[in-house]
Length: 481
Image 1 (spheres, helix red, strand yellow):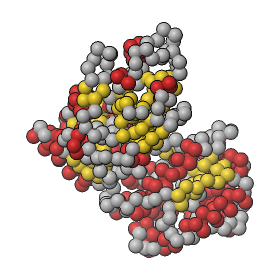
Image 2: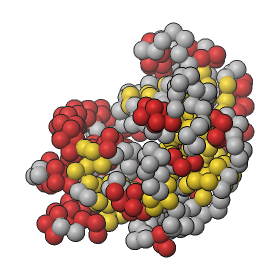
Image 3: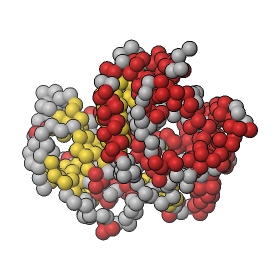
Image 4: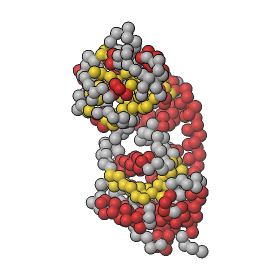
């Protein structure tokens, strides 16, 4: 019986769930696990269907050597290769392992999107799963933590489904495959550092467990499966509660609706809501304290004073709604407290996006169908509030500027008066900390304000809407980069 058959069978089963022409991205670190996965994927699916994706974290002095090794390994097999360099954030309260993992997955998803690949294969195996369950048990994790790694998972907002074809196989089986096929791989020196909890389990705990409880990996895998099943039931309940409590397409929760639930149900909803937003999971102690504060400010009626910080984010309350915002966002009482940013300029030539990193967001210029030969400003406004003729965008250089205070715009018909942005924000119930947005100018004329729309005063009544038009949108990053 071939020594590599278990790996080949596992990859074949994973491949059978995909369309015949679907491409597969393999997260390729260069270690033995991902090297085995990539080699087996090429043997089963063919090199043309595979792309190897490498993330350069810059945490090891050998990172450049690893990048070169991975590129060579892929090219030797005729596999397309791509890599991204990331900067691992060192935020307070977030471990270096967690920060690196978050940066890695964001980079992998970016590469999958760039290559239009919707399936990402990961090399984790049964030993990794057992270590994960043990870590979560020792941390006092809930069901979501004990469920550990899913064989298949589609994260909210990600373009690629994450698949772990080798999750039921032992590390020893992967090493046997590597030996049979004479694979060369990287040994990351940090894997021997027992200051990291996972490494301590791997080198000092699981060997002892294997002696006294030889089947511990299978037992922990069953524990993870049971926890995952129970978590699915809790998620189903949370989805029911979300229907009653969510606002603003899931970006906000009703303060009153959340507090109407008992503590267990409210905490379950908070955990689920945070996962849908892609936020880092909070500890039970942190969430319990957050719920206590929510109940206190709800009783006192001063929710606008609420600020609960977690992993670079802040939970805020405004007019009865709860939001998660970037933790460094300010809460200006008036225009004098707004942060000034460097002006960005763009000569618009049909670009569909304009990324503004200083505001952590993007202007989107989406083409729309012409309104027709008899179109006018009023009818166009009725159909699409933020539609602008292309001729206006080409009229002068576009610039993105900070609010300085006192800016005015007209959101209605020609008979409407120009009003201050501050008054319009207040009228529409936009929280104070969301008002620090880039103002889009054409030349020296204010053209568009995120959350408020197009300044009608910048669009003469005689303007032709029958020609090419675009809808202007502002997309704000949810998480801190």
